[in-house]
Length: 146
Image (tube, rainbow, N blue to C red; front, side, top):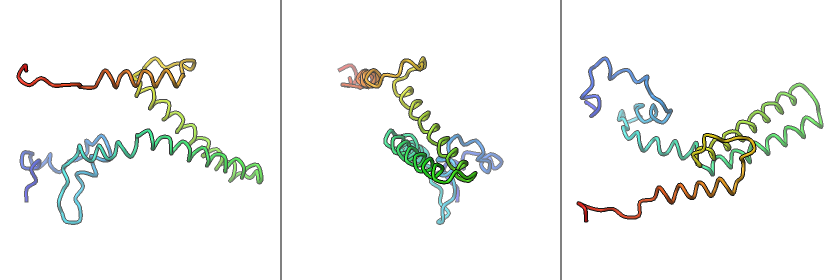
């Protein structure tokens, strides 16, 4: 059985799937149990992007890591062992990563490359994001100049 994309590829290149940029791309091309392949890569990317980088997921991760860091800190305060110190350090590293991810998300959302430490004003960011969304909205289409 030939798959549509494999039908136009040579044998040597159809077996090499090493150039995937996202895990969702590779997963979309992996054979399933029924030996069929899903070549709907855009759909797989949309699902992956929504699960990884949506604002709700970022906020949930931040809250989860804040709680984890608080629990590990309390555990270390009660019993300052090397294991608890390591666990607390890992929890704090996860929290810092989540906070950095949140900052990058909002900087990208506002399309700001010049983000400095003193420029973090939530109301300002949201105003810029809303302005960009309004500007990027298509209000109407002309068909054949009409």
